[in-house]
Amino acid sequence: MGERRLFGTDGVRGLANGELLTPELAVALSASAARVLAERDRTHRPVAVVGRDPRASGEMLEAAVVAGLTSAGADAVRVGVLPTPAVAHLVDALGADLGVMISASHNPMPDNGIKLFASGGHKLPDALEIAVEDGMRDTGPRPTGAGIGRVRDLPDAAERYTAHLIDGTPSLAGLRVVVDCAHGAASTVAPDAYRRAGAEVVALHAEPDGLNINDGVGSTHLGPLQAAVREHGADLGIAHDGDADRCLAVDAAGAVIDGDRIMAVLAVAMRDAGELARDTLVTTVMSNLGLHLAMEAAGIAVRTTAVGDRYVLEELRAGGFTLGGEQSGHVVLPARSTTGDGLLTALRLMARMAETGSSLAELAGIVTPLPQVLQNVVVGDKGAVAASTAVRDAVEAAQVELGGTGRVLLRPSGTEQLVRVMVEAPTEEQARDTAAALAEVVAAAG
Image (cartoon, rainbow, N blue to C red):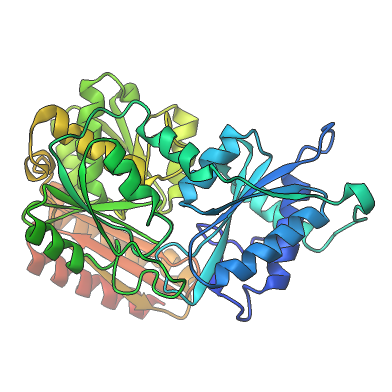
């Protein structure tokens, strides 16, 4: 197999109809995915679930994806505008061979992306992504006549997903929540799910027109949500990104509750309910040291992975763990979802508030985040930085100085010639000074 070129940490992403993400690429990619992911000895035609977020280019790319799938002999089931986790769920629920989600998540409207799911609704491991990419160059014979795939719509796709979400969710009666849908894929299903679970819902930025997705709203722009929570006297606010696979929150006073603090609340809740396998939380190296300290105090172990929810998912599956996620708000609950699900996360967070009678601020207060500084250093050679004795010595010295009250992390970019220097320390000033000093050493070495 060759080296991965197209796929990033979450599918293929770029400027829609630009140099990379063209309809031609979408046809070739989806056709290869159908050939690679479908079991070749099946007695029935392979089936693929196809969903998208509301951005305008999704209409074009959906047509191309469907053409590619059917040209490879797979049937395409179009589920329309739905969150990424809904597509993953429907792949599993329908017994489909694969799923295709067309979305660029939190990226600006001109971008788009293609995410693939294997049978069961699982994201593809590296080896399968490479196989799909390699398969784009080796099309082989194409089916003709009755061998060409067919296309159908699934009118009740949103209802199936919503019913799955609220199944087993306790009543949220008495809670008032503002949900920022980012004019994205959650614009209909999120307010509906939260209302049906019993909450009083104020829907914000839930009028997608194909052009306004993520435009100053959603999980990457929390200001409007913070203001709306205070204006409506809500108990909390929930912010989704364009494809709703992540969830951030704000408390009643408008303070931000990031993914680390959400995971802490859920970890304690699941431990108390006997649902936290081996009393362990899985997160990435970017999670704040404050989360680690809070979990240690609560008697909960923390496993860390590389950055990217795909690696969290791999660790969850390998260890049989039941909760994992990222500081950015991707939270995975494997008992209910095969990927990050922002709506499921929000429902579980609100359920903890309802069952304890505690405010979100009180629940999230178990974590005291340490000041964190992230500095990107442009270098000529990332490899030289990784091999540098001077860099290694500087990192070790900084970590010794911080002791158990701080943390240093150097991480090369996966796509650019730069190194990310992250420092956590007891004070903002110390974090900035330490990061600046390390950045100078990194720049000199690279």
